[in-house]
Image 1 (cartoon, helix red, strand yellow):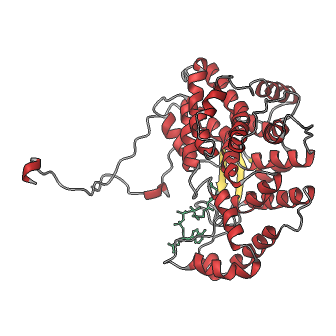
Image 2 (cartoon, helix red, strand yellow; image 1 turned 60 degrees about the vertical axis):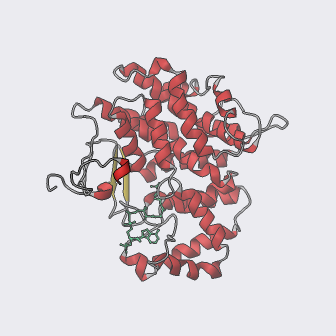
Image 3 (cartoon, rainbow, N blue to C red; image 1 turned 90 degrees about the vertical axis):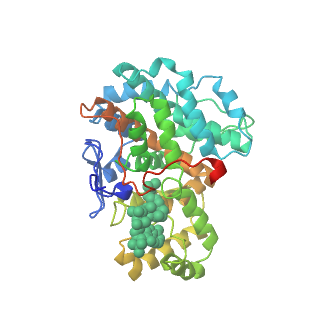
Length: 392
Ligand code: CMC
């Protein structure tokens, strides 16, 4: 059994070469195509970051205009898709709806499933980036029993999404530009993060030649778990459970107790052994959104800030290098934007779609790419003979 390197959780196995995202976990650095996340989040917009991830360079003004136009004009989904939604139980978790409906896109867009054709690959890529907000908003509307809202082409990506989520036919809806900008920045923060579990899932699924819609559905399924994209939902649930600052020590003690499975959600990271740079920007975005929505005195924010302070000064967290990650402050922010916790991971999936797609394209174009096929260390029974059921 000594033939293979045993590496559970792939902590020391590079599964691919990639030019998309660089992380220095010890220093807390995140670069997309060489550009620091702080600069992209502050100065860029999400579609610009999408272009950067897909094509490797920031777009010129003409390229940006063309890209924005193309994405905008792919936002509608086939009308039959709405019937697909109504097949779900009305209380279905929106992530369950996302896994199914995004996978179903491969049955609607046959003309972009030939992965050997670069043009079809690009059409599929644009379709997914464009349709994900529409599908996510439909999952939300279905979940709360409101009618679907169609996309509106004169709005930018984030504003369009907020409108599809929060507009109702009986009222005028005007997008608050501060909130749209915050939404856009949250999308930027989640756009890509190199070979995390869901991205590796997309690559592995894609390595067999499966169509891109099916691969992204696999990524969404993986993202759902509480150790990954589900952590934003779990983090807010935890803050609500703690409720008040005086109860923090009890939860810190539980997180440190080896006999208690409880972990501080939104804390710790496989790669970052320093402050997650996305968490800092998310914290800033949280302040902006709470201010714009009149929730600057949100008691959960007090709990989060105090929890962070106590944990960062605690020997256990210091020794294990556990810092807040992107999900620690996103929950409070998304709640203030008006989303229920069940939508949090959906928003992550929406934003991460571009990263998955860029990584998938890079893999397809990589001449070294082969089907992903990990090996194992077999620890089961040795060869033995079958015994008829009457003799067992
Ligand atoms: N609270 C308390 N202890 C922790 C935590 C935490 N949040 N995270 C890690 N530890 C401890 C863990 O018990 C272990 O201790 P020991 O070495 O004594 O057994 C040590 O730190 C290392 O943890 P690990 O589970 O071996 O590390 P990992 O790299 O396998 O897991 C992680 C990384 C993110 C899954 C983990 O830190 C965790 O469960 N965090 C909470 C969930 C979370 O916030 N996830 C979001 C990650 S960022 C966004 C995303 O990827 O979607």
